[in-house]
Structures are given as C-alpha cells and as structure tokens.
Image (tube, rainbow, N blue to C red):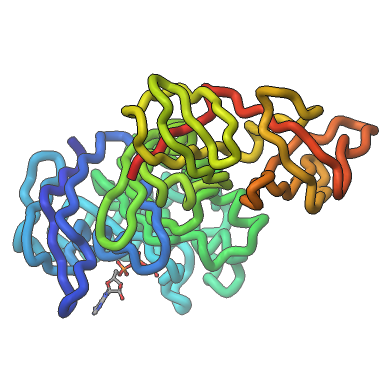
Length: 348
Ligand code: ATP
C-alpha cells in the first residue's frame, strides 16, 4: 500500500477530529478525502504530512512507519490551499528551492527544473515572478515545486479552492493528467463532491471524524452505504417505506414496489432514488401518483418538484430533447415509475 492509516485518533478537547480512522491508499492512485467542513479531512492529511501529532494509531507510507518523523523527513510533500509560492523569486527559483535546500548539484537542479516546467506546461515562463502569472499558473508552480523532489506521495489540501470555476475545471483535468503521467500517489482533500467524482480513482467520504464509505466514484454514487453519503453526493430523494417481504416495499401511500435489495419483512427502511432515475408518465396502477408543484428549466434538464398524495415531496430531473418543451406543467397529475435497479434500500 502507498499509505496505510490504522485506527487514527485525534482529539481536540472533547471533539474527536479523527475517530478511529483506518484506510489504505494504493500506489499510483488518485485518492480523495471528501466531506463537509469540519469532518476531519484536513486533520487526516496533516497527520500524514506530519503537521498534526496523533493521539493514537499509526501511519505507514510504502511500509515505512512515520511515527515521530518530522515533516521534511517523510516521503511525502504537500500542496496547500493558498499557493504559497515565494513572490520575490522567479518561477524557476521557486521550483528549485527545495532542491537547493537538499544540496542537489547545480546541473541536476537545472535539468530537474526544466523537466518540471515542461510537466506543468510552463515552459518559457521560468524567469517570471508569481505576480506576472494567473492564479492557475501560480498553482501549477506550487505543484511543480512539490513534485520536484520526487515524493512518493503528494498531499493536496483543497488546492483549487482559490480559483474561479472555469480555471478550476481546467486545473482538475490538469492535476489528473499530472498524476497519471508521474505515477505518484495523490491524496486530495476537497469538500466539493463534483470535484471528487470528476478526479478520483477512489473516494473516502468522511463525516464527524469517521470514514463512512470508500469506493470508486461510481460505487459511491450508485451504491451509497449510508444516508449521509447518499445525501452528500449528488441529489437524492428519500422515501420512507416498510419491507413487505423479499425485495418488495410498501410506501406510506399504500403503493407497493420492488427494489433490488431485500430486507426482512416489517423493517422500516428509507428508499433512496436519484431524481434522474424517476420517470414521469401518465398515472397507472403501478406508478406512484404525484402532482407537479414547480418546474425549473435548466437548459440541459428540466427539474420537476413533485408532491406525493400524502404530501411528501420528490424531485425528478428529465433531460430536455432539442426543440421540445417540458412534458408536464404545474398542477398536472403524473405517475412516477421507479426502476427497481435504481432504488437503494437504507436501513439505518
Ligand atoms: P475544512 O474543510 O473546513 O477545512 P475539515 O474537514 O478539513 O474542514 P479539520 O480541519 O480536519 O476539518 O477539523 C476537524 C475538526 O477539528 C473541526 O471541528 C475543527 O474545528 C477541529 N480542529 C481542527 N484543528 C484544531 C485545532 N488546532 N484546535 C482545536 N480544534 C481543531
């Protein structure tokens, strides 16, 4: 494993910022720690970097135990949220800084700086000062500087949060390319679920000091293991129901429908279904009756805000076809079809 965290514990007073966290990050993986503000993701990243001392547990990087090692002796490097490039130094000097500290020979430094400039596509900008660069270019200098020493693991603490949305999308692809080309394991922290889905090989979803689920973007999106994960990633409808035997469930409106997973008869469950998986059509015996309360045209999609007969609300998202207007309007009675394979059964 590139990084192994076992039973990590970090408390601040009575608050457990890391509450028995264990996870294993594979070599050459783009691994993301995702969760809301305060969930402990930065604490975990800083513990791997050596900036946070743990109250319990152990971390190894490629088999080497990191306990007691100061940050600069660890086989990892960090890119911080603020670009943290030195404003008075040129781009080349910024990238060379760490190598000079480690007393690399001059010729090797020159070659390495050129290699890094090519890697982050800043060739020709070696002599510029950070103030003469865009925000995205400054962030690339910070990444190049962190990669120059050849760490086995690169830790990235919300490195894109200072960039505007357009630049951010560009840098997301850029970082993914850098990770693929260098083969270095990236551990990336973000609170932005869309960013995590776009960039990661695997994601660890965290809340309140705990890791709730680890999986590929598809696994996390399609098969969320807990209500928090289902709610935090993308949009989700939650429908209370009772298990009626096998994979069958009874809703409060009396309708019975099938999901793809069983639960023992009588168990109260929550059925989770994504808005884009609900199908709107005419009312029929096996569809869920609802009334359209609001429609929102979003260009590619139309969002339907719906009320079931018992008053519970749902949201459906339908793709707009070119030239056609939304199928249904406010006040229309519709029948919703919920495909069994799209319904996740949550019991907790
Ligand atoms: P954010 O996205 O806002 O940075 P985060 O998920 O990275 O959030 P952490 O910074 O890891 O969260 O913090 C986890 C919890 O530990 C938070 O409740 C935070 O207030 C608390 N915490 C972090 N550092 C300290 C500290 N030095 N002293 C006291 N409490 C701290």
